Image 1 (cartoon, rainbow, N blue to C red):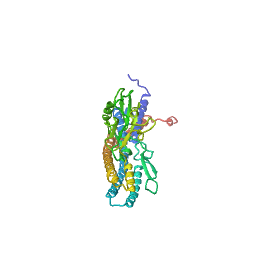
Image 2 (cartoon, rainbow, N blue to C red; image 1 turned 90 degrees about the horizontal axis):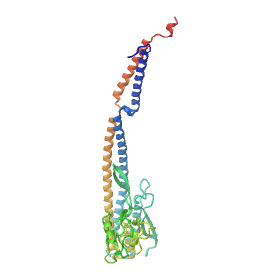
Image 3 (tube, rainbow, N blue to C red; image 1 turned 90 degrees about the vertical axis):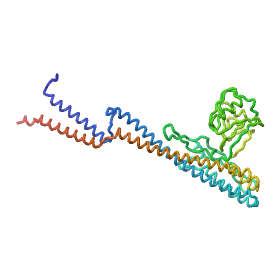
Image 4 (cartoon, helix red, strand yellow; image 1 turned 30 degrees about the horizontal axis):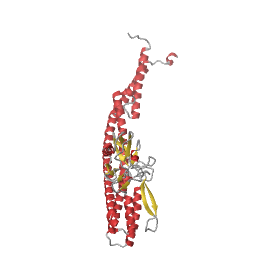
Length: 414
């Protein structure tokens, strides 16, 4: 039962005015933020959807930026590799000319001068720095020069020349997320791009009686291979061949040493994980030496880099060795040129994939933006209408209240 008193009318008017002002304030906040939901209580279900849509939109935008960054990196890397292909084609032309036997030793020395300059240009491409100031072909060692150059005297030359070029980067490449749980590689190790021949390594120690003394692991091309206590050389060979790396292991029939051969053109990267298995087998030096130049002195290594092949061509031209130029050197140049072409195709394929990821991310951003707009954006027409109606109700309430309480202090001063 409601009690009727003299204050009831005033309380009702004040209550309705406060409600109208609260609703009007909410509409003003929505108009100012252009958002339909200003607090979770406005629409809890829509607010839950909106949070998820906004989170997905942020991720999609970041995926698009990542893919665009990769696209730019692949474009720069592709240009340097393409130029290196052109350089190698010119070097091969010079090698063919030098191997035909019609040029004098002085002519070959003149050809060697051009080869030496092309070698310098090839090293410059390998040590290229991208727009962000990072080494392109140093793997994850972005702030390090990819290749170290050593110069020294060369027999028959009048000045110091490049005598060796060693890889100074890392084996791994950065992984960049371009979609949900989908990654692409950023950067390419120079030990793969600028390598000429398949590398082969034969240990100088008899491995037929070897057994692993304790549980451990070995690292081949960055892949960890676990070994168990008691594993013999045949078990080790089987585990290496089944590890999914581009390396084939076998037992050398002559020396009975462990034989490792790459299945494509790249530099072997060997390291002991837990234990000293590779050291005991005579493949690498002790653990204080870091790959890739930690091969044991007693091991036999074959297969060199692109720079080794070009240096061999230059030295053969200086010495006038027609047989070497037309044989092993020319074969190494062909292998290096084939590998460069393959790496160029790989970078081009990654570039195309990056473009596909950019296109997909753009579509996802548009779809997510539409979902966010549907759940959270304010209908301006409806909001303006509601605001005007609330303002009209407020003015009408104030007008009626003024008429209900028209007496003032002046009425009692007559």
